[in-house]
Length: 466
Image (tube, rainbow, N blue to C red; front, side):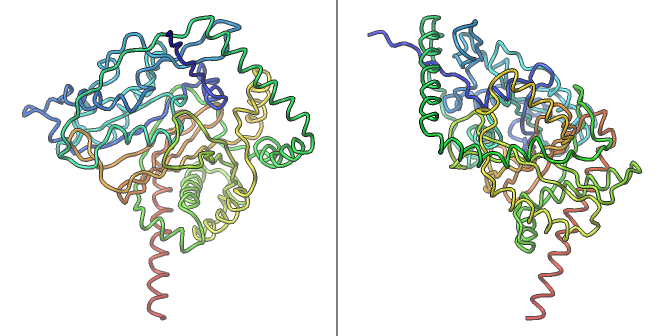
C-alpha cells in the first residue's frame, strides 16, 4: 500500500513571522557559556567532532533540524516543511575562535558577526557555533534558529533537547534517519483544496451563529485597539527604522532576589523585567539630554497562547500586548507597582492570535502601517528556563542569555531567561539607534540592584519589628 507523505504546512502564526524576513531577518537564539575543559584538546583546540556527535545523537528529538522550508507554486497552498534530501551536520555545527583577548566584549562582537550572516534557506534553518578562547577554559556556545521554527518557549525546549541533566551521561548512538519524499503536486493540490473547504466551512458555521461571532469580535476589540489605536508613543531618539547591524549587552541577576522583589511589590517576575527595562531607558534618554518627565513609553510584551508551558509543538503560538512604562518616575519601587497594576489590567483582556487575524497580504501591509504609527520601539521576552544545572557533552552550562529578533522600528529587544538560580538578560539594539547601549545596560543593572537592595532592607526591617 502506497503511503503518501504528510503535508506539514506552516501555521498562520508561523507565516506571519516569515513575512518580514526579506527586510529584517527573523532569527532568534541563545548565547551560553560552558565550562569547556572537557571539550578542549591539550593545545587548546576545540573538539568539534565530540560536539557534533553529541548533537547528532539528539536530532531525532528535533525534526525541524533536518527539514527545510518549501514554497510550492501558485495554487498548491502555502509554505510547508519537508525533509532535507541531503543533510550534513558539518554545515550547521562549527567553530569560531575568539580574537585575543577572549573577553566578554569579543564574545558579544563575534556573536553579532555570526548573527548577521543570513541562514541558508536551502538548508535547515539553524546553526550551533562554539566560541573557544574565553579565560579559564570557558567556551561560548551560540545556537540560533529562524523564528519560524519556534517561538521563545518552544525555543527553550529545543535547546533543552541538546542538553543533559548530568556530566556523566553516556553518549547515545544516533538513530537511523531517512528523509521522507516531498509531497508531489497532486498531494499538495488536494491538501490545499481540503484546507480551503475547511476554512469555508468554518466561515459558514460562524455566519450561522452571528451572536457568537459578534461576541468574539467584541472580546477581541480591546486587544486590537491597544495594539493599533491607542495614543502613539512619544517621539524619541529610539524611533528609528532598524538596519542590519546590532549591538549587544548583558545584564546579570539572581532569580531568588528577583522573585523576592516581585513578591514584595505584588508583581510578577515579568513586571520586574519591565521595571528594569524602564530604568535602563530612563538612564539612556537622560544621558542623551532628552526629556523624560511625564514620558510614558509603550513597549511590546509577548503573551504565550500555549496552555501547557512545559510541552507543546514547535512553531509560534504567541500574541502581543502593549504596556506603557513611566520614565519620569524616580522611585524604582513606585514604578514597579505601577507596572504591576497596568499589566494585571491588560492581562485580563482576551487576546486572539495575530496570525489568524492578519493572514492576507493587504491586511499585513495595513497592519505594518498601523504598527509604525504607534511608535512602539522596544520589545521584550521573559522565558522560564530549567532551574537545575545542565550539561553539554559533559561540560556544564554556566550561563545563558536569550537573543531576540527585531523588525520595523523596534530598535531594542530585551530578553530574559532564568536558569539554575540566575535571571539573565540580553539587550539587542539596532547599532544606529543604540551606539551607547552600555548606558542602557548600566541603568538597567542599577535598577535591578536598587530594587533588590530596597526589598532586602524592607524585609530586614519587617523582621526586626516583629
